[in-house]
Image (cartoon, rainbow, N blue to C red; front, side, top):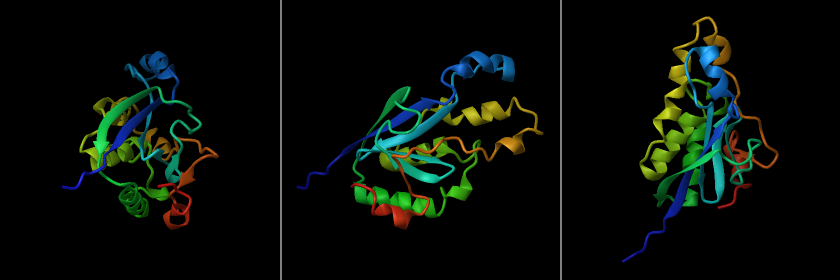
Length: 174
């Protein structure tokens, strides 16, 4: 009988507002928000995330955001590093390319949710995935078009981007 390897899968959660959303959202939006969430998936020794530069990775906690505000254990996966890289390459060439980013509808949290389901069958917490619709419900329709293409995450010098996946695969450690 073959023993299947399993690998831990984690969700890293960062508050982009560094606590300011909690303080300012009641005044600015008329609604309490606990944070402005950025998420990433950590598996096979790397942190994977999506932003304006496409799918990127870095050492865990290696983004300009530093260490995550919280970590959710998604369980384990039997998806190998090689299969995972094939999956990410496919996503970067179709669904999660640089030109597909939208801060409200197709963002880092949508990416993390899709990848979490691929790896473990679990979704990320709904308080994260529901945040864009909560914010949009408070904004005037006149402001939404100017906000939808914001590039949320600054790029780190220690990361690799899968924006041009075939070029970047050689740089990734398995």
